[in-house]
Image 1 (spheres, rainbow, N blue to C red):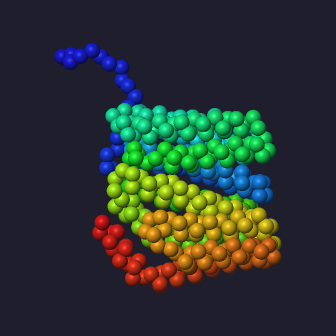
Image 2: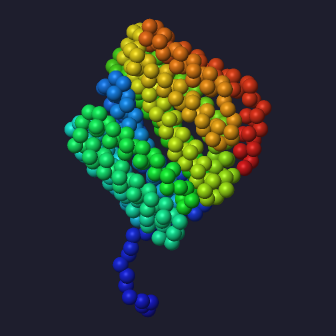
Image 3: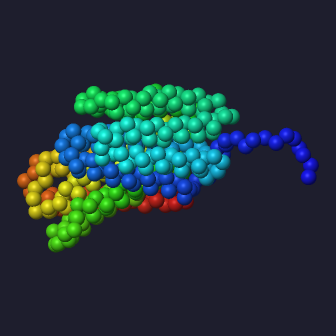
Length: 394
């Protein structure tokens, strides 16, 4: 055997993804951890069903969302199943799982543990991005900027573990603002992504959030299954099905095409940041709020909802619809009046929801969404068919 040179110790590597559009099994495995995280946020809000409880749940969801977003961008640059990335992904999954387990008491006994786990998740993400950017100066500059905002955000969460009350909440809000604002203030020039992969990954996370709503129906039903619970489960499924239809029937396909057709570099990265990283969060948050409403409805279908659960159920649906309006405007600059009106109708129903039986409120919401789906199916039938044929041929 001939020697070609001195032995070298293997070094950490990150293999660039290329143009592979598929979402890998490891990415799906990673995303499953987020199922528990979203469920835990719902549980946090269900345990403390107050305005403060809603704010806490949404703050935690926002922090966890931006942790996931970082890995969505990462795995659109590097192959998650090659080099050192696979082991780092498993380590990040473990840390994210620990963070999810801390959520029920994240503003109390487990605050420090959550902050530590969060720092591990984000540090692994930054290290992998630095490895991937060894030969790409523009990407490395963007990663260094992101690392700075991430370090400050992590430090704020650690500081929040030693605070309480309004100060603690303010530190969390500032950490979330830095997480969300980093990609905006440090620019989009250096980032890279595979358009169809990136769009599909975000579509799958919406699907995961919808699945968590199914879990909320099961949690709310507890041990008793009677006629009222069965009716509520059916109506809840109708609401979730309408949410699925409103996103996946055409909207997600058009957004994927818009991202793919955007000029590579600044334009494409800005579309990805705004349409997916930013505007998918209110979609997921709206679904999570509706899941809270489901859980409270199933507790006693014959009683009216209290104000906060009523706002969660109907306001969550409104937030989801308005996020779609903004999503469509960002991608194709078209305004969806019917979805704005449906969102307004949801908000207007809140006072009635505190008087009507919870089952009736859920029925009205399901009917409203069914009418919206049916209207769009008829009103835009021709456009819908043309778009689907074009997208299928692409």
